[in-house]
Amino acid sequence: MKFRAPVSKNETYDVTIMDLTYQGMGVAKIDSFPIFVANSLPGEEIVMKVTKVAKTYAFGRVMEWKSKSPDRVEDKDAQYTQTGIAPLQHLAYPAQLEFKQHQIQELFYKVHLNSVEVSPTIGMDKPYGYRNKAQIPVRSVNGQLTTGFYRRNSHDLVPMEDFYIQDPEIDKAIVVVRDILRKYHTAPYNEENHTGVIKTIMVRRGHYSHEMMIVLITRAKKIPMNFEITEEIRKQLPEVKSIIQNVNAAQTNVLMGKEEKILWGSAVIHDTLLGQNFAISADSFYQVNPVQTEKLYELAIKKAGLTGNETVIDAYCGIGTISLAMAQHAKTVYGVEIVDKAIQDAKINAKLNKIHNVKFFTGKAEEQMDKWQHDGLEPAVIVVDPPRKGLAPEFITAATAMTPKKVVYVSCNPSTLVRDVQLFMENGYHVDQPVVPIDQFPQTPHVESVTVLVKD
Image (tube, rainbow, N blue to C red; front, side, top):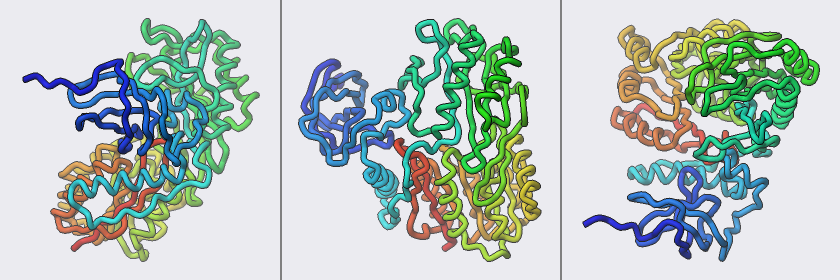
């Protein structure tokens, strides 16, 4: 017998919101059938209209609130929810921090690791205006070159000038660059026809240095009037130290292409993190919330418990931010990263900071770990900061075979963290309590955390 969902599209229903998903959407249930509703909070009684029905779930929209949560705050701007820039803006900040702690705790409960304790989330004093990097699409709206952000799950550009979670100086710079491109009649990218010149404006700004980089990502190899455009950007934005053109002629969701031209200034800007100097290129991976990153790294160093005599491996080392911070407290640090450009940056950053007890290698983390294991390397501490997909099982096998005293796991995805922790436990490690969440991305559902695994 074919299953029929208990709800129909375009029908309205009275429901009570029971929970929030990890994406920050409210969840209601009708006959145990989940319906996900944006801009709704647990405990709220609402009238909801169903917008989409799938086999095992549906989506709905709030039509009316019969009761509101005490944790609800006024939206700064509906566009921040529509575009997914700040999907939790309607949730009071203390409640956002609780939601993030709860998200991690629930995932441990689901796999019956009830003994794992998750501490309260470390938050920010000012949970907005924190992002030091922006990637803003450029399109034509009503015949005019416009900057903004895509409406969620679409490629419809919503014109915007204030992005709320970005450094306000970056927001101002985007408007300046937009107006200069308008003045010189630069053609915005047309996705359907794959025509036009400029696809995206990227801006990076040092939190401490205030040095700014402007990257014009283009479909075309040449920007008409590029000398005049560059000169005007320099005059109007005195913080700018680097203006770069990145050519990406492909029809793809990948943001940047391989070809880069320095239109003016330096190939990098500089900023400091925990007192160390970092050179940041257009495509460097550099944490976007420097205030919270310092808290994150300080915690990781403290949890590593280094005395100055240890060998440390930093897997997924990027441009060397954690490696160089750890190097001041360890005997030797080995870093590995698959992106060769990042390793080149890491070596430059080691030189910049006159740090000589680090060695960087390009390669897949799991393959390099295997190699180090066969070479007889015996790290006391392994630090991992993997992408959202977490660690490969082969990595965990090689890492635990080296029998480090501690593994410090910096995670940006609670579900892969919990999966990986189980594998470490099978290989003779236990969680050193508690897991500590850190809010790197206020107003969004994302959460970072630090977990320490200790040899049994």
